[in-house]
Amino acid sequence: MKKGFTLLEIIIVIGIFLLLVSIVFSSVRVANDSLRAKTHQEIYTQLLGASRRARDGAYNSSWGVYFNYNEVTKEADSLILYAGDNYASRDVNYDLVTKIDPQINFSNISLEDVALFVGDGNEVTFEAYSGDPHQIGSIILKTGNKETLITIDSTGVPLIKYVE
Image 1 (tube, one colour):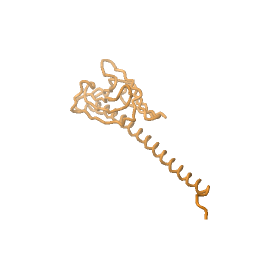
Image 2 (cartoon, rainbow, N blue to C red):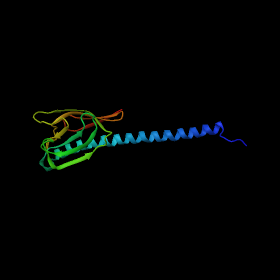
Image 3 (cartoon, rainbow, N blue to C red):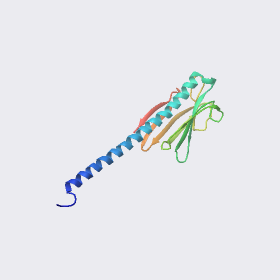
Image 4 (tube, helix red, strand yellow):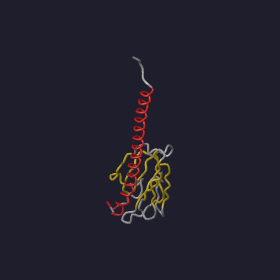
């Protein structure tokens, strides 16, 4: 009786191993895409929530979202939903902090102040009752090689677009 494996047995084992590896890698990719979509949607939802709270006149205040991230590495830390005319003069009693996965990068935040309103470039504030934005522009979020564009125009309604 011969000892060892036949060529056919080795090929079958290698095939099964490659199949398992491909399943694991596709699962990781799906998980990353899910993380991206969930987190990017959460950021968009916070902006939409600030706009709605401002339009509703919640607590007779303007509402905004502050993007807390490292400006050098672009890694996200958190979002802060706040009540007030800007982040610096906000009422901290209404702060709602949302942690963000550090895999999410704010690859570009391009926000310009409208009229007399002054922000620090990392925030968007919506005027009480009208919902008019104090800042307009765009935010590009990046996870791996996937990007999401969030725009805030003069209507004060944030828009989201997934870019592949």
